Image 1 (tube, rainbow, N blue to C red):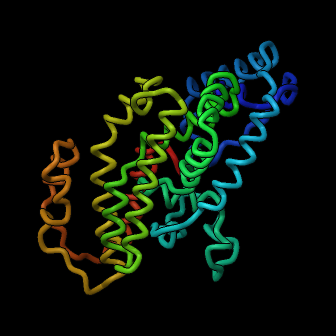
Image 2: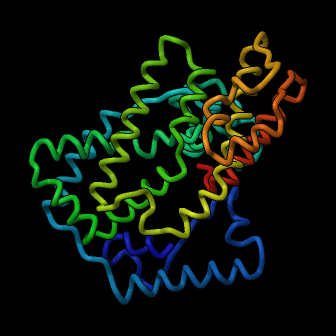
Length: 307
């Protein structure tokens, strides 16, 4: 909250702050009395901080560079497979997943669109375009890298934006995204998914370079530890969800034994492998839809993100 308020332009908060809290996550801030008081303290501190120490106005050259990167990033925006179709039946949101039930991708609401990508641990709408924008402006003029670092260190809005994307990378897992691709994406689109994962890694590298970090969440070890503790449980739910979605979309697909389903994780040192081993078999059952809905709720709770 404090970071969000300090990233607001000067003279936008004058002793008042209006905040919209999504119903899906309202219990995290207001579910208990002590949480309500802590949330109020954060809002109050953020409002006072912005008034007493207003953020600096961005330099004209920073704005020019941001505008240039925005154009580049927009051109890079694409899409890939997600459980968006099933999201509408989940019933954890306050609105339908689409503005028109029969509409296509253009009728999607922003929240379910982001939510679906969060489920696959790929977070495409969050980072796609960042890497290309960084790469092209740096290739255009090597001095732009120093300007980007200057923007990160001196412009609160830019810093908060980069930090939020970095946090999303900490929650992401391109290996999980690849599992969804292998099961749910047609063969002719597989190379597209592979290229997106290459872009993911390149964007991650450039983001760390701009922030001056050697590793993800270097500046927030507490959050990094929390995410590491939750990762094995979320990964297990992802594996379950991916194969359940496959069974729903392809009734002829039957799973007899699971080892080959999660080979990458069974052979790795990830704690998630131990949890996957607890249920080595996955037979077809009438409750597949309930299963996928439960995994979606579990992943959302573990990721602390809906949309």
